Image 1 (tube, rainbow, N blue to C red):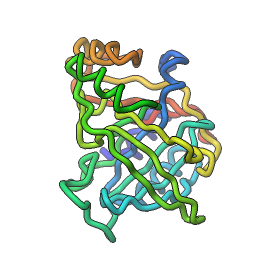
Image 2: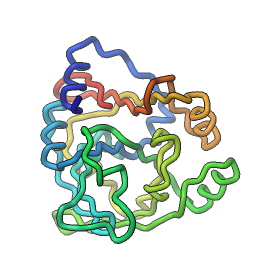
Image 3: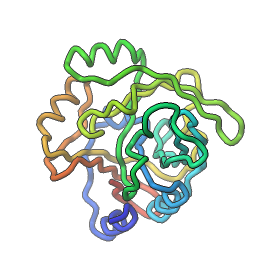
Image 4: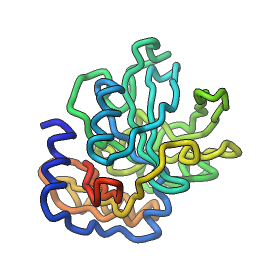
Length: 231
């Protein structure tokens, strides 16, 4: 089932309130919606939310490109796909983008600072976040965004545990993204929910995690189409 048909079906039902503490929502930097084709992903999200994403730019080193919808002043939805113009500089593309799959929310990024120290503290709890890497992309208006983040290819608990990002002095991408949507709630499902909750508590994230057949991130968004669920 594609992302569109799934979320449209959910939207036509009575949508439950997804509970997440304000502390967790304040830590959400962005949600990652992976799609096999960027234009298709933009169209899917526009159908679901009633907001057309702003083209973000390319990540040549990763072999990806993206488009963004703001979900708040410092929070956004990143629609990301393989970039046909670039191959990754090393390894495969992140988020499983080298394999064609239905569009879905595959990961989330949490706001962070002092990432190397944070990475080391997480490792003391047996949580491997990988190396802290530098990234950059140029916006269509020519502005250069730079950031630091933990390794995207170091996936913990099937993406339910976030990677961490620090934008430093760069303007937050949500400020230049399409407006009109707001993140209301975020929760996760995982077959080993107890273990995932323990990992999240160890890094001070109180994301609700429920038992489920397969790992999933589930976001509730207020938008021109009403209150919809994206997963």
